[in-house]
Length: 109
Length: 117
Image (cartoon, rainbow over all chains, first blue to last red; front, side, top):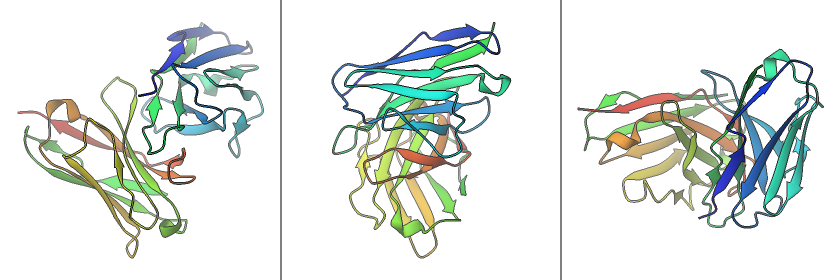
């Protein structure tokens, strides 16, 4: 099973600041990685797929990068609506054995 | 839009069938997935199925107990859950996949399942 880790577990940021979230796989997943955002009481929403492609209608302040085992989600200038939990997920396996990271909570500093 | 239903309180060892009604897209053209989230915890993939209804795949934790299926004439995805355990307690989300074996593009709002005596 491909194991995903994320760091930090919690990131305290002020509005307008830059936030950098990390995701690591214990073996290569190529660029078969997505980032989801989840706000309290809501379903996750897709932010980035293919490691670096923003999903439709996702603001340009969100950017993904990386390949292989190391990935990063950057929020260039945090807005109030960006305080949420962010999960990475790999979809490299076939047959599917999708695995998620434990999440990074971005909260108000 | 995806609208889940069927979640409730059930005793350990019991059964439950979740439904997910889809609208706004050509349901039969898309693979679908169930993901669950235990209270206060992270996300865990449960099962996926192709658009035609074949090729179901399951997480090891539910294999042999859960069955994913779909009715493309009614645009509904199902998750039959048998021999439920306390650790199956979670909110269950259905999701529309980009491709079978690929990521989920869009999620429903979830339905809660509680397994407790």
